[in-house]
Length: 317
Ligand SMILES: C[S@@+](CC[C@H](N)C(=O)[O-])C[C@H]1O[C@@H](n2cnc3c(N)ncnc32)[C@H](O)[C@@H]1O
Image 1 (cartoon, rainbow, N blue to C red):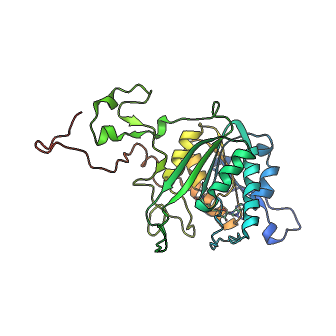
Image 2 (image 1 turned 135 degrees about the vertical axis):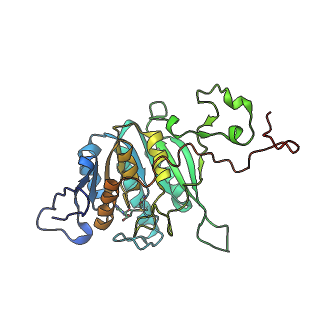
Image 3 (image 1 turned 90 degrees about the horizontal axis):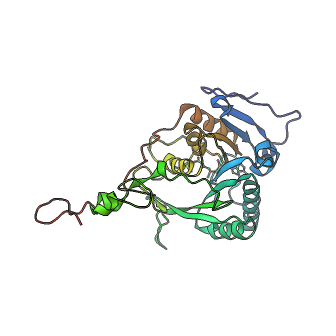
């Protein structure tokens, strides 16, 4: 029976005889007293058998699939023929959407080349409206000269019902530019229900803690070159789920969704094709996030505070 060092892990061994490696499923591996459970294998085979999925008991899905960019994943073939990749995409989207409660939300993190396919499929076939089309903007995109350098991924937010969906903006508010930069008194007396000087973040996400997790970034986990920033999942978890809710990530990877969900009192279930990644994710959940809360409430204005030329004082309007 596999064990994870430095983590309280309970595993259920696969039944004998063992299937071929590519078909292996293991799990659940669990930690934090069962708050985090991860199954190892192909999400398309595992998820339909889980009671929580069959009962449509999932509150929040966050999916960051392989992009089919020929990356050296531990196990997964990331260079499928295009039509196979699209079928794979339609399959897991259908399973995840079918797992949601009527109040549920599904986020998909996806680059330019497949975003449009997903938007059309989810709208027309899965009949889920889009609540937001956000952009995660990062610096340090791969250098190129034959076109503009890519510096974004799409964060697509679909909901079962716009009227019934879980939406909690208060924990993720940020100071508005009117407050930090233009000193506009109107922002101190707002009529939109938000606290003075604060606003719901814009739909392009960037900032101090939002860069790609790479190089010597302290947040970085070894062997995970596609790890998302904690700040990203912190915003997703806090704004579109409630404490106690069930969060599902079909592509757990290094466990960014898991660690933020469990830290903020949600329950987590996930699948991951690589046993090594699943073990790493569990150890990460046991250790807790690197800097929870640090990115919350930070201004994102890109201009310096405006001052009057003569007095040097902030300009009131
Ligand atoms: C882009 S990474 C996810 C990264 C993750 N969001 C993070 O922050 O660490 C995609 C992950 O999906 C896993 N994967 C690929 N195909 C899978 C499948 N069919 N079922 C389950 N996991 C899969 C890969 O092993 C990889 O770890």
